[in-house]
Image (cartoon, rainbow, N blue to C red; front, side, top):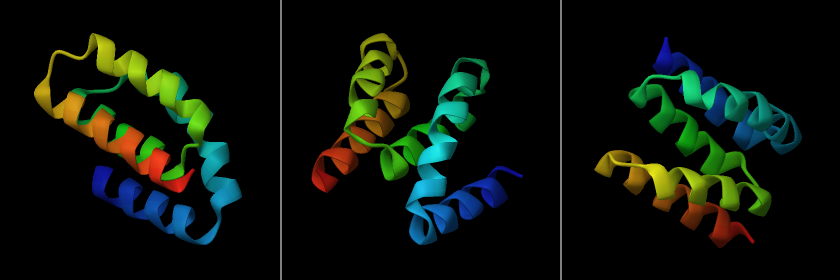
Length: 85
């Protein structure tokens, strides 16, 4: 299920940036309730589809993250957004 959702989001990001941006807020709202694996997936999507206004939110995750994989995913997402600016 997760893989299918990721593939679908990657297609949306590639073909319809506006629609992808509309998915950001609902994903963000669900983030705290997700498993660690799903949180990593959402962080990736936030990096791929998010705008610079997502960076402070990601930095908030980074500040509280204990898991090294989460910290790495957040840093990569911030870098991805920054490169697009």
